[in-house]
Length: 138
Image 1 (tube, one colour):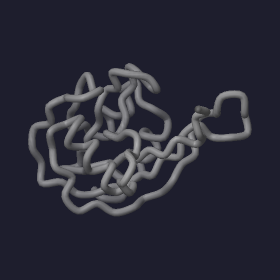
Image 2 (cartoon, helix red, strand yellow):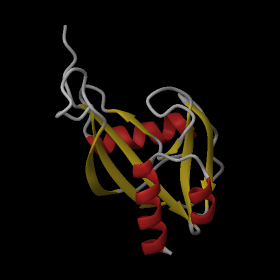
Image 3 (cartoon, helix red, strand yellow):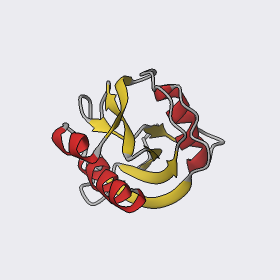
Image 4 (cartoon, helix red, strand yellow):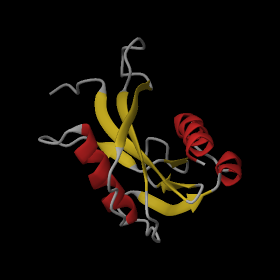
């Protein structure tokens, strides 16, 4: 059975006291890079439900109220350089805080200031969106 592209994924940028929640990816794609918690949208889920589930699986935190931010087309599909490999639905929200604990496919999880994010090995989309969120919400 052929894989369909793009693969639908969702993530969420949570902000707490001028910090944003990031996880260090433990698996490909983006292994070793920091990014918003997120992953594949499972059958029967919508993008928002998937984003909330992924936050819980990767950090142990509950997302709470989140809002849609934007959709990104990322990567290239196998044998079709014109097609995106992933369609990422990004959400954001304000979080009451808590200590994230890395789980599922996240090697690390934590709250980071904008200066810290800019010094980390971070995915380009997460860096741009973190800058946007932390400058807007702060």
